Image 1 (cartoon, rainbow, N blue to C red):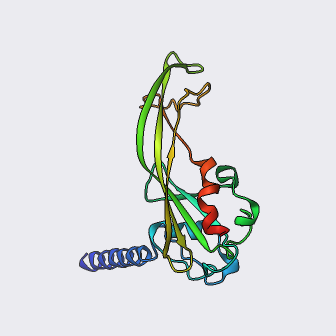
Image 2 (tube, one colour):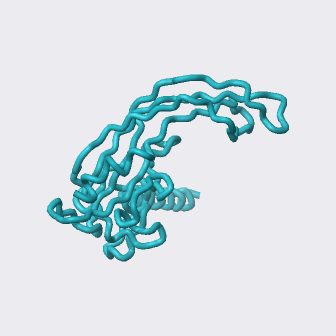
Image 3 (cartoon, one colour):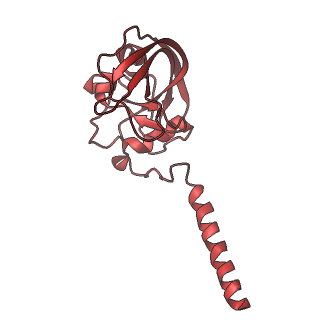
Length: 205
């Protein structure tokens, strides 16, 4: 019986050590490749957590064009940053790379985080299809901070503040009506229209 207990104990230790070793590779557990041709958008998201990407293209402020990738803070987990697609940024094609291409040419990474929010209005009376209840939408003005990093070194190249505003209740809203939901949807001003002007001096000086 003692031999079996010792065996189980040793197995448990080995699993614990393996888990600790996996944790050393970063919060996502994803190691960036050494080959720039293999870099994808999710690798560069690590810049927003302070991790430099050695395989990224070098940033030289004296150059003429510095491609950028933008990421926004996840609304459910502030430690996670999600890639912003072209429809969310309105960046010219020449300033970034296509989503389905390697990100080895990206020199800069911009990380967008909401730092302040001010409730403007609670919009009530939204009917829920198939439900005998109504929903509420809270609309907020918001302030965002955009931090721009040199992708290869992790150096902060610059920071920008963006003020956004919402002044109208939406006409249509999709609510989550699962168990325990309070049927309150929060909407925040978005900086889509401002991003191009803010990053231009870094990307195309």
